[in-house]
Length: 570
Image 1 (cartoon, one colour):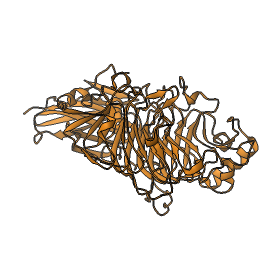
Image 2 (cartoon, helix red, strand yellow; image 1 turned 90 degrees about the vertical axis):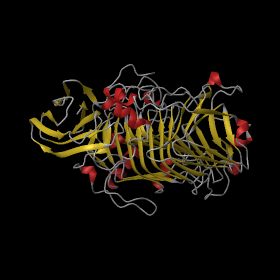
Image 3 (tube, one colour; image 1 turned 120 degrees about the vertical axis):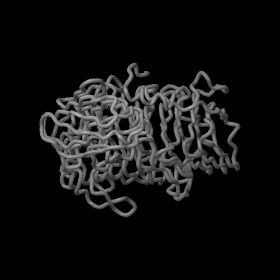
Image 4 (cartoon, helix red, strand yellow; image 1 turned 90 degrees about the horizontal axis):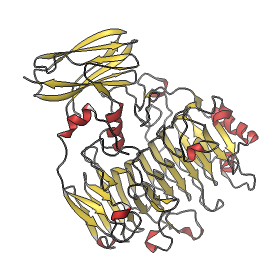
């Protein structure tokens, strides 16, 4: 669904629209094993169907390159969707930057128009699949990847090389994918099948995917700085004995969308197969659809909606993380009645645990036995085992308390008005225990460093579709005076300004306030940050050194953000 409104921000950025580039159509015949292929930012690449990079091939993708997937009706060879598949023994080196990300998106997504596709435009193409030679928990040690015809040999993955290297993904944004190959057979945004620890996956986004955001099928790869937002199914999904790890993960569900869980974690297939999944995840922030929200469809309408489910003999550890705003329980661990090979067994053996995490605002209640559950294979609560799970969670430093995120309570139907950073002076901003070897030690809980204004941007800023979408929607803007829950910001006076502009604003209570003036590239030109008393306040901006043009004036206060347009004309 396309957005039907405009904003000052969109108008200001309209003049910065990029010019049309040459489009290179890529078919399956274009990427061959044993070859090196270079995709550059001066062209756009259009995937025409399922495109495999075969064993021995290498694909280099330059920073700033855009890759698009054709929709079903436009594919020349009859494939149901378009996807890029890096076969076992091949490698991809897609190294974007924070200012020049590599973008995978739909054929019709106009990247120069921030209001073109939104968080409900899903399933427009397939996704990105990477296959490797690391160990997986399947009979025979290999399998065909989910979403692809079982007879396709190039879609096989698995092996015994746990340090296998499939390349590098860095600053890669994957948008509007998840198209169906057949009924109930969609492609994840990013699929990692048997990918080894020699592979680098860092700064990854999946935005508005029809199926899961990121799914691991075995392997040992580690994934850091991962954002998954507005997916039609689960956010982070693992299976087949994934034994890697992750840090700084963000999952965001839309308040009115069909959706799944932020984490759906399976151990092996069949359940007794080895090795079972046991990753370690630090600094996740998972935000649900709202503690009192009702989704129109999808997994969130199950009898037991959850933030995370462990099943099929899955293990794993979450540490120093935040789980909040879900319409059901927090964590469920499967305790099967028909076998002892289950995730509850992994919990009892110490292979599954939660340590030093925040849990807050769940629809099922506020007691530990409301939030931390054991469930049978039909997801019915097992009371005796639930008591043991709940007691264990409380013993391991987990707390049921407000982590004081900057702002998630005022989300509209589009999922806007979310600032998932912990408040700079809140409880979750400090005190997190040191991380184990191989992970970064930070003092804060959750995925993002503390902050309350644009002087402390998060790692998703700028390069992700999510940051563009949230910036477009969560800023309240207008002419004259704008208001949000008692916080008011007047238009600058005079406007246009030539010498100086007076900025009047009003606070319903004392608050830390930041005023920031940015240019059309998002570069801050002026900042002031301090605490103000309740009531009407004024600041002045010196305009004498500013070039003629349009600017954005942003007020951040107590998790709220207001915007006015400011014009300079000498």
